[in-house]
Amino acid sequence: MILSTNAIKPWKPGYVRRADGAIVTVQAFPVESLVQPKDELWRNLIINKSKHQIIVVDRLIKNGKHYAIVYVLQSESKSSPMARNIQYDITSLHNVQATGTMLEALMKTSVDALLTEVSITD
Image (cartoon, rainbow, N blue to C red; front, side, top):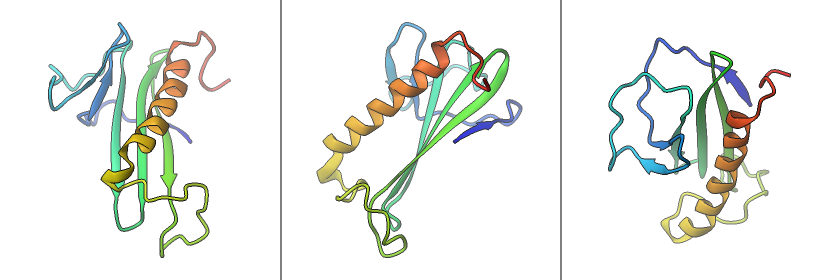
């Protein structure tokens, strides 16, 4: 899902993909300002263990406009028994390697959207 975001309401990222391609955690490398640079991708993860769900929010600036690309990773749970696309609990630390691989693939998709010359709304 692609959404327009409000640039006036700052939201501290959890991860930053810098212009040089480095991906850093904000916990280790704090952002200097809550004003997002146009050449960076900011990521937040919203983890809901009871629903076995991770919502990924990748924020970027394209053609001067602020967007968020939202991904929902959902494994089977009592609250959503039909979600069978992921057969293991994505919120469990025992599955961090596989979940991390998925998150990395989604990051690549968002970086492609950031770097492409075509308007994101085309």
